[in-house]
Each structure stands twice: as C-alpha cells, then as structure tokens.
Image (cartoon, rainbow, N blue to C red; front, side, top):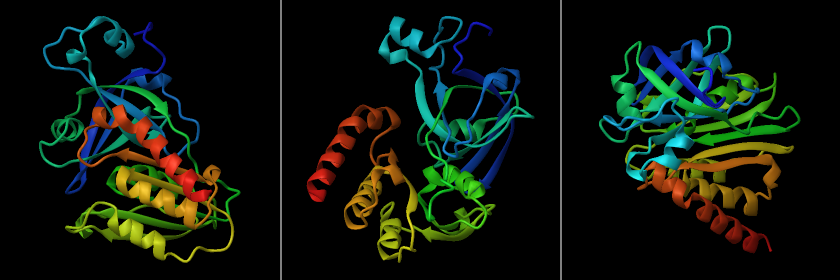
Length: 277
C-alpha cells in the first residue's frame, strides 16, 4: 500500500506463544513493517485496529477517513499495546497480550491468532526511557505495564540502581526477565486483593535510596492515582522525573476510559496542586 498513511502498518502473525497462563505473546512481521521505526524508547506503543466483521471499509484503509465518512457504530475498535520488542533486521514486532478468556477484544484475538493472520496498527507512540542521569530508577506496574517494564529493565544503564515492583495474579504469572543495572526485582502476587493494592503498599514502605529517582508507574488508574499522589506530595518527586499514567481503568473498556481520561487527569492534577499548596 504505497499510498497508506505513514503511521498505518499491517503486520502478519509469524508465531505465538503462551508465556504464562494469562499472557500470550504474538510476533508479527511482514514487508509492510519496513516503515515502522522506533526511537530508543522503552514504552513504545501501537494502537491495534480491530474492524467489525462483515463491514466493507473503503480502500486504502485509513482510520481517520473511516471516522469521517462512516457511522460511529462501524468504526474500528482501537486497543493500545506496548511494543515488547522490535527487531528492525528481521522486521518483527513482539506484542504481549493479557488474556482472560472471552473477555475483551484483543485478548481473544491473540488466543485465536495463527501464522498468516493480519493485524492492522497505528503508531508508534511513547515517551519514556530510563534516564542515564538518574540517581536510581523506580518501575511499578501491573500486567498491562509488564511489557514496558521488562523492556526498561533491559535498557537500564550498566550498574544503575533500580527497584522494580510488578504485580500479577500469582507465582504462575511470573516471567523470566533479562535485567540490566543493579536491579532489585520484586514480584507481588495479587491473589484476591484489589488490583494495585500490593504495589501501593510496596512503594509506600520502600526506603528510597539517595539521589534523584526516575520513576515509571503505569497500570490500573485507581492505584496509579494513589501512587502519583504519594510520589508527588509525600516524596516530593518533581513531575519531570515521573512517567505515570493509567493504562486502563477498572470497570471501563478502552473506549470508555479514553472518553473520560482527560477529565480524570485534570481532576488528579487539581487535587495534587491543592495538596502541594
């Protein structure tokens, strides 16, 4: 598709792997990924495009054009996923999907995916990489942030001190990660507790090392809000040393969360400003 927008990419499934009971890895490749380019960030993400079955979309396919010319009810669904790895030589992209049975769109797609299946995507976006100037690093997240945390751990500067807290359902969901730097990696098991409860407790109880922290905190919006307040208000961490955002929100699908996320963030910022005086 020579006339497709530069941020539109079509991948072809090369292989899949169940890396834990609730995590499916899908590797996509294909000639159309030759234009895909990353910039050294470790939280690069793409928006996966899931068209409605049976709908005849105009060619060449363009999400914006579809939104401008077709009824909302047939607009493709978008789901945001971190690029776990990108191999420019092989032109292969690795994506990890949290899978909870038939719930959602992307997880069930990944469970059914076989070599040769196509996957349309937009991007990449992103904005974080561990700073070589930081005194130490803090990485915190649930399963949705695991791919970005894993990529960040691999990219830590040699000898860089880091504390990483990753919350998953149980020990069976842990992964073997390649870790650079001087990292203390802690897996937290949720069990039946609310998402993020263990993460909030771990960060609150952490004795911060000396030096300026560079923090990456992502996952369910509720616990992210709590930790943002703790880091900004209690720990006095400047915003420029934080990459912090709710990837998802309990009880809302991706469209629903995107619709209110801007207002949610404004409210969080206002409460934070009031607390900081």
